Each structure stands twice: as structure tokens, then as C-alpha cells.
Amino acid sequence: MRAHVWHAHAITAFAGCTALVLGVTGTGVAQAGSRDLGRQVLPAGDGWGSAEGGTSGGSAADAEHVYTVTTWAEFKAALRDGGDAPKIIKIKGMIDAVSQGCDAFVTGGYDLQQYLKDYDPAVYGNDKVAMGPQEDARVASAARQDAEIKANIPSNTTIVGVGRNSGILGGSLQIKGVQNVIMRNLTIEAPLDCFPKWDPTDDNRTGNWNSEYDAVVVYGTHHVWLDHNTFTDGRYPDSERPVYFGKVFQQHDGLTDIVRGANHVTVSWNRFENHDKNMLIGNSDGSASQDAGKLKVTMHHNRFDGILQRSPRVRFGQVDVYNNHYVVNEEQKDDYYVFGVGISSQLHATDNAITLPAGAKVGKVLKKWNESPLTAENNHVNGRLTDLIAVHNAEIPAETLQSGAGWTPTLRRKVDSPRAVPAIVKAQAGAGKVC
Image (cartoon, rainbow, N blue to C red):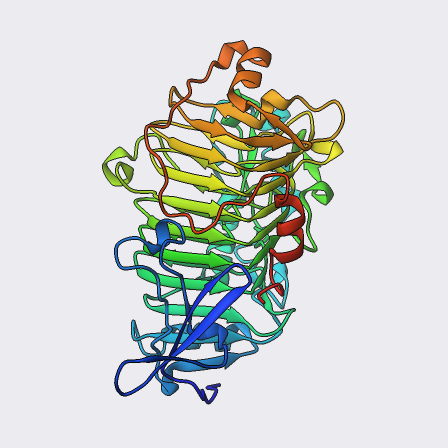
């Protein structure tokens, strides 16, 4: 499972498509060398992930802690090996966390058709949560899936895809309670919840399906770099999910959620494709004790294509969002938002490009959840400079937003013109585009 590493002491700084590899000599003098993706670190000044010591992942791993994996079992074993010692895990090919399908997790007599009969609102009502044998069986089956598809990422780890088509299908990567993690050049297909929960009391007692499993969750962790990845629903788009009780059988949750005191995160040069709930930064209005003063996140040069909401939705954090391209499709234009303004958020969104279909309301780019001023300047909609706050307030006066996030980002290496952003991120963002 382990791979020999020829440049065990090389440390690489990378930004966009310019990489500099530094080999350290015995005298400490840096010299040029060949590029090794696993040895690259987040450059100084590249977003919040570069603050307070920066993010180096497993770049200092010795040869005994460099792994090449081709199966989910090998991947989880590599994560466990060596504890928090620096490690580099190279994923070769697409590895499947649910290779045997959802039926492998069923236990306790769970049967979806019986579940639907038992909790049909016409029979069960909407005044109490689901309880009974089928709900118990659903919980037991869900626990089996949970144990299999979640992978806990330790501190001081770099995970990289090999080549242009490597990554993870259906796994949930838990970057939880650790520090110093890098993930790059991976295609990650969002996990499919085999056993969504029906909550009759949700959505103003009209009921709703609730799912578990984010593709990547950064939870109580500091110093993370997510770069040049592709996050997608892949084989299981929400548009193909069935409808039960008048509600979509929701089997996806977030793509990359950053929550519970997570801090100093840079999200750069990724693609987010065809998903509903993209990124939640802060997951509860009641988490001020954990989140206040944290949730410092930078998002730059990402492409969001076929999005519906949360790109991101922010609570509490100082979040810098610049040079991203957001593409809303025709079928999403009536029910979308890009930037969600939540409690005590300090969102600074500038120099972004937004592409909307004909007839889409520009004011819906912003969504107000709480009274939190934001900065939204020099953003372009369909190629034209647009004051997002002014348009939002004119089109949706019941959600008037205030301007001025109260801080100015300093950790930016290069800001491109928003006119150039669509072409730049189309060419360079996502897995297989590390150059």
C-alpha cells in the first residue's frame, strides 16, 4: 500500500497555476526541484488558511507515511496508520465507499414501502415525529451506513488524487477536531443517504425528508486547504430523486460544510456541480460560544455550476469570497440564492462573476436570514457591474440589507478582474486542473 517517495524533504508552495518546488539543502538553502503534489503547502498570504502558522498538511511525511490507495478499505487503513504523524495519501482511481449498494446496510426489517405506508401523513398526521418499528429499523440501518461511509481524517494529513480521474464515490470525509489538513485534485461524489428520515413536523407541519452526510465536513478543525477538487452529485442528481408525500426524497446534504468552531480555511480553485446545499459556514444560530471569533474562511477562484443555495450561507464568520464564478441554470432560477447572510456574519464578497438565465431576479443572489451587514462590491452579473445590495433591497424590500462588513481582507495573493473570472476558473478550477 505504501509508495516510495523520491523527494521526501521537498516542500512546495503553490498558487493558481504557478508552482515552486523548494528542496532544502543541508545548509537550509532552497533550490529548484521537481513538483510533487503531496509535498505542496498553502502559500503565504493565500487566504485565511495561511494565517497563524499556515497549512502544510502532511508535506513533511517520511517515506514510511506515504501511501497509494485504490480501495476504500485501504484508504481508511492509511488514515489510521501512524496517528497524527505527517502523512500523504495518494488516491489512485475512483474508489467506492458503497460498492455493495444500499441493500448491504439494511437491518431490523426496514422496508421503504412499509415505511411510506406507516408514516403517510394521511394516516400518521403531522403533529408528532415518526416513531415505531419501521423508524427503529431505519435508525439501525442508517447506523450501519454511517459506520461504513464515514472516514475520519487525522491531523497533519495531505490527501491528493493521482492524475486527472481519481477520487471518492459516496464517502463522507470527516475533518473533525483536528488541524492542518490538505485535500487536492480529487473528484468527490456526494454520499447518498440510503435511509432519509421523514419528519412530519418539519416545514411548518407539512413534513419533510431529512438526510445525513456531507461530502466533506470541517468540524472544530483549524487550518484546512481544499484546492482543485470537484464536488458533485455525480450519478445521483437531486433532479432524479423520487417524490414521496409531496416532498423530494432528499438523499443529499452539504458538499463542504465548515462548522462548530472551525477556523482558518482556504477553499480555492474547486468546482461545485449540480447540487442543492453547497456550503454552510456555521450551522446553528445558537453556537456563538463555539463560533464567535472563528469560522474565518476564504473562498476564491471556485466555479459553482448548477447551484441552488448556500454558496455559502454564513453565520458568525469573517468570510472572504472573491473571484468565484456562479452559474444558475434555467430550472433553478425561481428558487435560488448564492450568498446567505446569517446571524453575526461578516461576509466580504467582491470581484465575483455571476451568470443568470433570462428572467432570473438579480436580487435573489443575496438572501437575508439575520441583520448582519455585508460588503458586496465590484461583482458582475452577466458581465455587467452590479450593486448586489442595492438591487436586492429594491427587489426584495422586506429583506433590506445593510452595507459594510466591518473588516477588509488582507490575505489575498492576486485579485483578477471579474470580467476575466469565468474564463479563468473554467480553464483552471477543479480536479485534473492542477498545473
